Length: 282
Image (cartoon, rainbow, N blue to C red; front, side):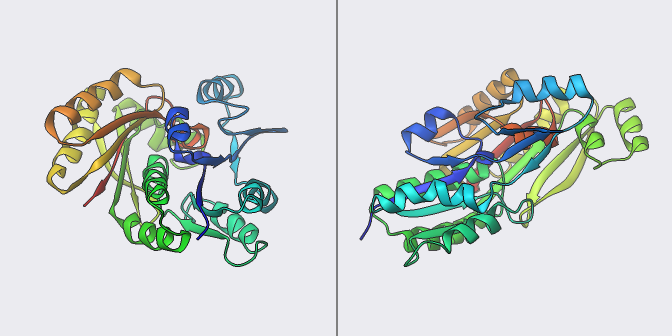
């Protein structure tokens, strides 16, 4: 049985430290400002993304890696005698899975397994860490694919968005909604449901209230949490993320609580000061 190498894409929002520790390989998506096409996490970071949005007044477009990008990423592992398991951004949100599947078909004997995460951000990252753990245990690519596809429905991803500006620029809320939301200090709550981003609530009032509600909703499920990993994922909100981490560690028995920063693709949709909690249910 061939060794298994785990691949994901840049929307996994894992830190460089975790990517290195678990030997996960990352295929970047693209962030496009007019004629400028940049690789997420490679040639552009979130801080620069926010600067460019402020400078231009426009959001970038995002694009999936092409089938050729995936084929080039996978071929080194296959030529080295390894099997590949790729876990990518939900097919409800992007063509990454479709393009990875096209690339996988060019390799013989099912050497590349493609898995639709049905989630985003560190929801994907959490699945990638699970897959890497099972690969180290000697599981085959087909076993890992079966286990991840069974486990992915356990992933809970919820974000609190601080500003409606990016949703407005991206055409996801009208000018009237943007004006009223900003006037009333409304912060949307977004959850991943059936592979798609779904607005589940709107919190009116201070930012601290919205953050506490996000935390309370997660802690209400603490007895159902898988205790291996939990992520607090943020965009330019390190202080709030640290507070949430402290509360989670005090009130649950999660073994590893990680803080990570959202990459450019997620940040371009949600904007700065977004905070999310990501975990798996048992």
